[in-house]
Length: 421
Image 1: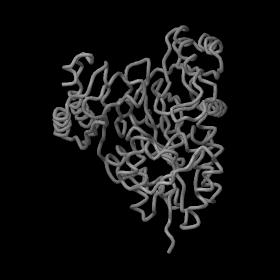
Image 2: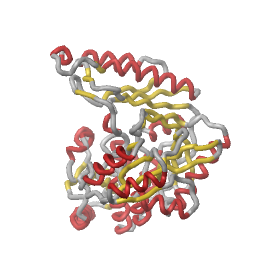
Image 3: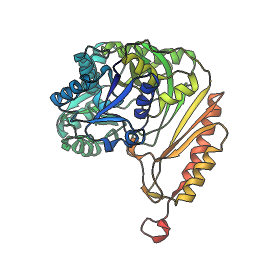
């Protein structure tokens, strides 16, 4: 019998990328990573993941690589865990006659300007906005919307380039920086447009939607302004019923308005009133930030497995199998520092893991590496996950554990020899 392959078009660099490959293998399918640079994904070598090197931005080259794989095995599904390659994977699945979202819908959704227009046209609550291609236009838009405003790229992920601007000088400076970029962090051509948006005030949440079903609501913790780095999540969010309903209903309306409805969607929202939910943005993919792992631990629902099953044409498994609470806290730094020597790092991780309820604690970087204030997800230094029977207990345990993990960072003067001792 011919092998069945699940093609993974690129990957995210942290979080669930590795899990997609593992879930495929558990289901008896061979995961194959199609990527331009395998070195970007250390887990691929560590897990001995089959890899095909190909320019994934070149449609012809990608198709040729897929046809070569088809000659030796059965391609059973196509997926990606990367925000940037959702349209590519969707188009490839369609060309192969395999399950997947509408390539046109996810392409439009990834353009946050098009997304805003679609949500506004459908009457789904979201921020006032303007799409501009010049600094002068950004300044005019900020005047019209009212300061402060959020200035961000029309495409992106992980809070990259998202900034709250308090005055017109800040608007001009940040807009100029974004518009000057010709490519993004993945080397993909930047579209030359940016968004200027109303700053929505209120607690932030996400709703994890699968198909058109709201699976779970997540409480989000965001670091200090003017950036929007996510520093933690609580699953499920502890909310009054009316607020839970408002968030879930708005999220599903947003997914429908955007022509989605296949597989996972990560909908970010703020509650700007007791029962008023406003959409920040919709991401046509599984959540990042280890949220799928929190959902698995708290609710017994494996969203990664569900996404893989959907890609293989099988029914996803979304029945709740647990009623715990799970929290994650990311280690970030308020100032420049350096990670302690290995022994001190090991000790900090060990002590974080001894906090009752903590099930995971790790650092992303090695001893002696410099760290600094996070501008986006790449500035996170590590994380802890805690599980308990009540939301408050899980959150408290995660807060205690991440504080202990933070003792691995030294804030000595980086220019002194003592800092590196």
